[in-house]
Length: 281
Image 1 (spheres, rainbow, N blue to C red):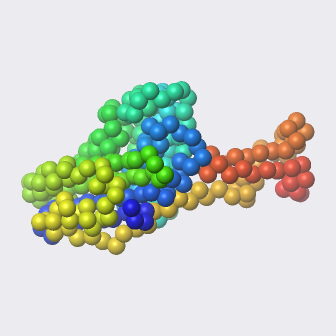
Image 2: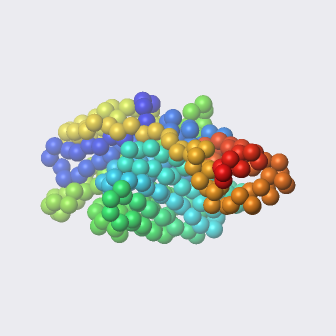
Image 3: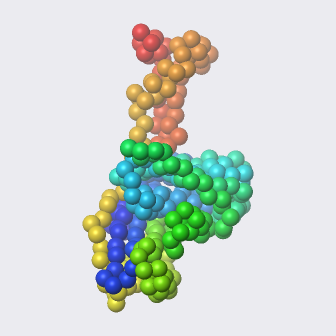
């Protein structure tokens, strides 16, 4: 696999647009050190791919959070990102995992998509998780929110030295409805022939050439995807200030020091009695 990249593409004569995302290092940075079961790693990989595709599809500048929450073994899983494809993510388990489908992992639950643009109003969409796969749940989201025919193909591999995740996206363009649906069905049938291994290991140009070589796919400049946690000692101090000096000093008297652990990157921030007094002085 090449760099972690998001590719957008269109076709010469067909009223359909597409996206292809392939992620390795960012995915490994997100799951590293968390000891998630393989099924949860795969879920986070698909959620990472989904968030990247949504960020490109919904066309905004700002932040996005795509969260799954329910009453199953995975209490919640979330990927936070932005329009620059800077990503981080985490999952929280409340019981043992017994399978890899959405109902087996999340139980009865929802997908919550929250967009916080740099300018403009905050938007939140809530999608019931009624299908077995995350791809099918997202297809329902596009059908309901944008009324545009959409298909998604996800692939993950969490075996071996490096985990990998990839995704393919097709959506009709809102022009000639009858023609665009015919175009979409043609490309959908071709896309259904892609294997997980091809999606995970071949470069974007090879994937698109193999699938659509007679349809003139036109690739745009790719966008790089990266893991950026965003935590810092300064942000941790801001959170401690909200607790108050008295309560913090009581904790230090009881435990000797205060340890704040980042849920995303697992970095630990330590504060002594002198640190707390200096903060409030």
